[in-house]
Length: 142
Image (tube, rainbow, N blue to C red; front, side, top):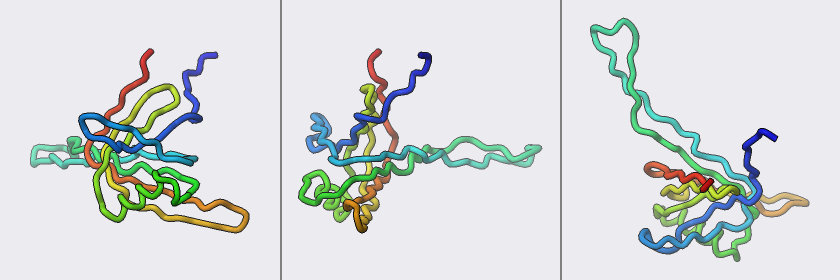
């Protein structure tokens, strides 16, 4: 086998419930899908009178949002905490732990948390966290 792909199964998203100096990563329960880090840097126009075509430099990176689907249970402490964070607008630390041990850490606030329900289904929600600042990726040890 030549593929180096890693499985999604076992991926976790956690919130730091400790301090910045001593993080305590508390997992969000019932996560079924994760999507994010898709933002882009802005374009800075540096074209001047000597330019023969438009010229640009890369501006600041915007990592945009991380969103994840959950099977909602408001008795679950991690779900109640996300809803409380949405109300307060607090910026918190988050960590995505991939199944191979790679971590992606970032700060952000809960931007949205819509909930859906339907016949013959569980209550679901999609949490969107707006990333504030840069991300820190630590590849798994070899």
